[in-house]
Image 1 (spheres, one colour):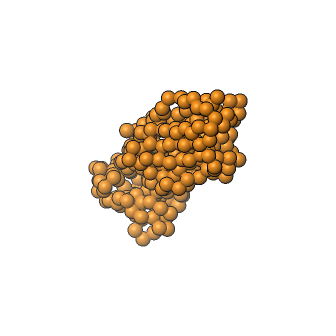
Image 2: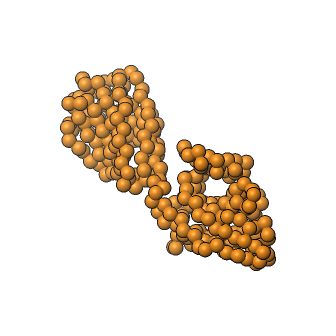
Image 3: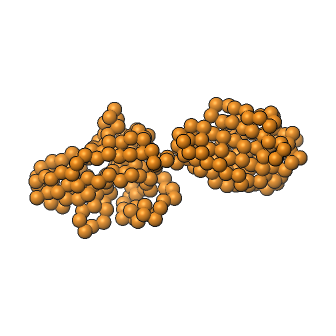
Length: 264
């Protein structure tokens, strides 16, 4: 379990503070907000959503001890004039705007804004392939990708390939809800499907041609059924750049699986 601790925001009356907060799926994240000391007696709360529609996740007037509400905990340290919120068992669905608020009674509440981004710890994800294959032109082949660390119904998973001397090509993706998109060059002889019980992804290729000789990759997308980018390493950006012109281009956090197919 990864825990992210960040102590950065200072709440000042009349000033809206904003910052980013990163957590890891299935882990715990903690964030603190400092406030002006004359508000130690005021009620503190933590809410989700745009300020005008913010929904309380936890609220308390208890001081100097942890208060719990479901996956949320709040601690108001009046000596340090800091209150801290913890969220447990994070998921990517927790990504949103949140507010640390102070109930100001007769005047507008003071608050600081944080943007929470929950990402999956890719060290817990693995994709396992079967051995390389040699096929004759005209034959068919099935490639499989065994997934662990996430469910195929929770994220889209895609296939790519790189033929000798060429850049990588995006074959297609099956999204978490089951819809499938293909690159324009792969709509006829290529089939992507999955077995959710086994949590295994497949790529079937029929009527093999010599140009199908390639290294094949499977990769997990960031979301179940939508395109959303996040910060990537330089290597990832170079990889994604090769499919920039496809209409379904997205950004990925992934472990790569190599599948060699040789036709003769």
